[in-house]
Image (cartoon, rainbow, N blue to C red; front, side):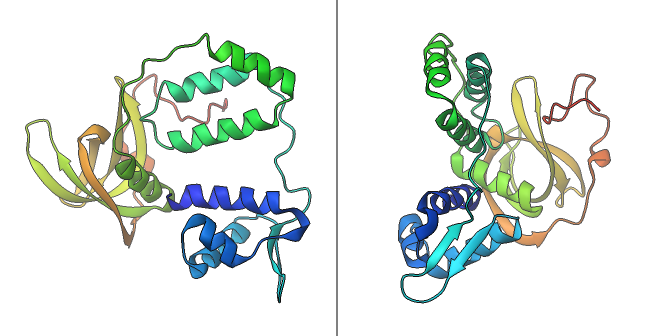
Length: 232
C-alpha cells in the first residue's frame, strides 16, 4: 500500500475507533509498517488539518475528534453511477485507484434507497476499458507529482530506444486516448512528454523539483482543460 492510500485508510480507522482510540502499535500491525512510520503518518495527517487527538499512558492511543467524519452526501442515483462510469472507463488515469476508493466511501454514506437504485442502474452500464499500466509505476508517478519530487524512469521511445531519465513532473495529460507524464527531462534539458504505457520502471528520488511551471509546457490543445471542472 502506497503512502497516500495508507494515510486515507489510517484516517478512516481513526474515525471508526471512536472515543476509545487505537494504539500506535495496533496501527503498525494493521498496516504492516513500523511504529515510527505510523507516528510520522499521524504527524502528516495532523499537519494537513485532520483533528487528531492523542492520549498518553496505558490504554492510551490516537483518535479523530468527534464530528470529523464524512458529512452527509446528497447524490442522485444517476450522479453516483456517472462517477462510477467515469472512473471505470479510465483505469489508467492518474489517481484512479484513489478515485475508486472515494466513490466507495460516497456509496457507503448514501441513504439505502438511493444506494440500491444506484447499484441497479450501475449494472446497466458496461465498460470495456483497456488494461491499466503497472500499478507500481503509476504509484511512483503519482507520488512524485503530488510531492513535487524528481522521478527516475526507464523509458522506451517509439523507435525502440531505451533510456534512464530523471524527470521533474509538471502535469499529467490525456490526449487521443493515452495518458502522458509531461515534465522537465534533465537528460535532454527540455520539456518532454512521456507516454505512461512506455515507462517500464519508475522510482521517486529525494531531489525536489526546481520549480518548472505549467506555462513552460506550451499552449494546451483547444479542448484541453484542467480536471477541476469549475467555471472560471
